[in-house]
Image: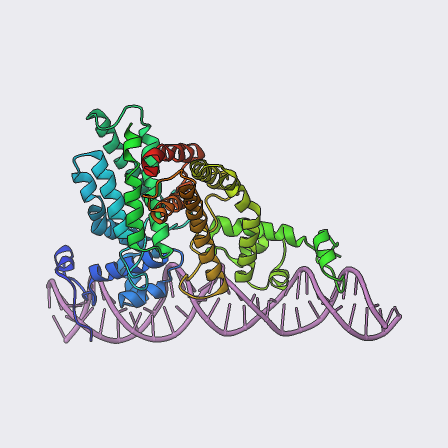
Length: 215
Length: 215
DNA sequence: TAAATTATGCAGCGATCAATGCAGAAACAT
DNA sequence: ATGTTTCTGCATTGATCGCTGCATAATTTA
């Protein structure tokens, strides 16, 4: 009855034994990512996912294991899609000032990009997932993402100190914390309906404080 | 069987007809506020509330109407308890610089105050509640709170411009947006486990940019 | 004491939650 | 053809969701 509509990815990865999947796994994963991104983990029902992915619950569980495993995979898909985009100019910048400004401006663009109706707003990792205090693989992943962002900013600042761009008097940890906090706030603001233009201007105003910071 | 343990508030407000309440309404409301604050609206079950409030579901609905009405009342209780504390030094400050610094420092203190286990972390209004796009009374209240905070900061900056503290070249809307965004970010950070000390230092580092901003 | 009023505990409502059992369908291998 | 393997749709599981009906308890009013 159903046709085989798999992408080449699946066909290569799996020896084609048994009945083939009737849906494109990567495409369904992308749809699931959008739903999770839009509603968060707890507020997303399996029925929301199956509707968006265009498959039944049995197929969902056969292909992705569980709601939590699907979320984990969707989160990794999210990172592989967007993380490089948000951080590319940060990484490529020659000065710390350009790097930080790029991070803030590009974050403002990214979190306020969607329409809010179908296209999600904000950052997927800013949404509270579930009990953060447990030691599930998902909670550990979320924590490592957060510390990773902080460390990246702090590392860049540290390099700038060595290169003489920033005074040794600046507390790098506190300043990196400030930047990450601002970035997190942008996600909340975007979800509350604040426009890209407003966040972009806020990011640029922020950078006007730079001369005083690097003192 | 049960004893009458009402506070005086109820006894005065209501002509004591019929069986009296066996619990202190204000006390139960306070407990409900903590649960909502800790878990958010969607992730809080009625059973969580009744357990924390020490009453049955029938009593909860008789006294508070519905989950949404209870949340609304809990939110107003939250505001009456803490809003003045966070904003008092902001309001009393003589200069805009002192006002903004007080807001950031006091926010850092407030959001990172709790233990995280029983005492909630972050700001109750930063938690996504439910569908923000509808026109329910609760959604409208949340929106008015957000715009209110922004307006308060912008008003204070405007006054500082008139008083000559801040250059007319500064875009007040963008700068106020920056401050509110940072404040929101503090709530997210605190929930993620960032300590009060780190947020406090970040707030103080932030204020080092002041001379460059006011031009 | 009797009637009226309000609150409580118990039990359960229909709906939805995440997740599964099962039989049949669609591909392979032999 | 026959068997093996994998996937799909349907129906359903037990648990929990927000919420309520109902009988009874506790109080005031008459």
